[in-house]
Length: 151
View (spheres, rainbow, N blue to C red):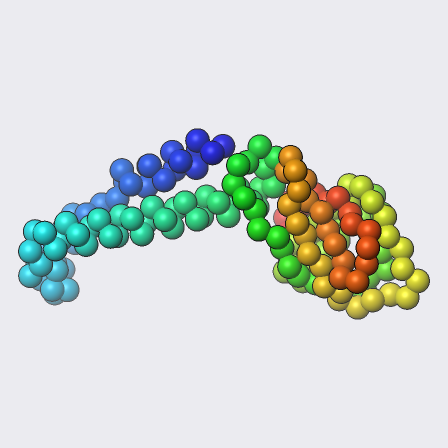
């Protein structure tokens, strides 16, 4: 997968279209780009190409993190949100819906609290081998969770 990310960035560099090919002569004139020297046009194209490459690499990183790919070498960031509605705990198979729209199924772990809590804060952190762990603010047990598609 890391190769695919690298290949995606390389493809973005190869697919960059210089500004003088993107615009007609009239558009180049109207925007003032026709007044740039060849050296200035080259520098502008290099800067835009680098920007495109960075944007593609960041998008690939986010896509891989969202896919929850256990073989991805891309570092995933923790997710901070709140649980939607009242929360009484979790057990294996429970689906936890977050305010950000994500849905996570509990794979392992359980927590039962007597008094329901409304919209507690949660952090979902990446672990080893693509595992994710949900921590409810103020509670000790963690749950091993997996992202449910469609959320």
